[in-house]
Length: 272
Image (tube, rainbow, N blue to C red; front, side, top):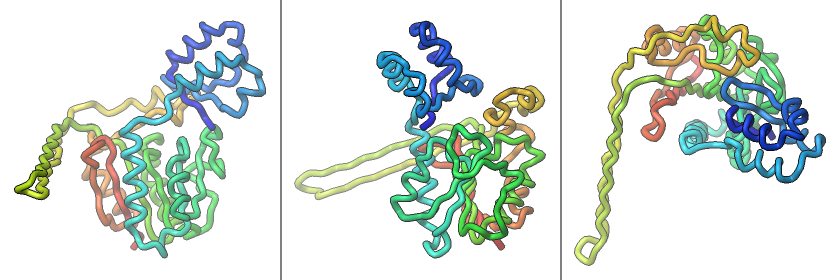
């Protein structure tokens, strides 16, 4: 398992357990503002129990918005015909939650990633996927494509199209201003056995963030970690993204941003 710490937290732990600094820094991988530590190597270095406890208790495992994203990933896969989702290629497994949940539903899931610390089944680049045509029924690629410069977006989409037999599920970060409205009313008494009312929606409008300067990321050690672009920024409108997806041969079945986490933009695609 990979343990993620904020860089500030990691530095505090190193300072607090200075006698174990060499082992901590040897096993740490800097990811911008975060640090990844392979838990399988911690025992090898025989860190003190107090240091181990500090690391595990300070770890960034998951937050509510991430859970929402995993919920919709599973929900969208379950909504598709089961006969066309038996085998799934997951690109970018992250902490492995999608696979853990998906296997409870008896999906056959194989993962790839360009970095080893996410423990994929196969280490590979999405720009050069090492599988034959239509190897998998469905491909899941969530919060991955923005980690490549946009000039590779169409190439990556074409590779997804090539290895998928039926469907591809994509999610991307979406920058915008938005206002959420969530009104819920439930009445239960002797006159009304049960009455409930729910109004839930969000209203978004364009933000005016300038595009990300990708040149400042390309030479970083963790060049696969930052976002090179996001939907909603000046040069990457939703219309542009949708047009590129459709131009790659896909028919978009549905696209949406969840009320609970509008930052994630889901696109369910079918091969045509």
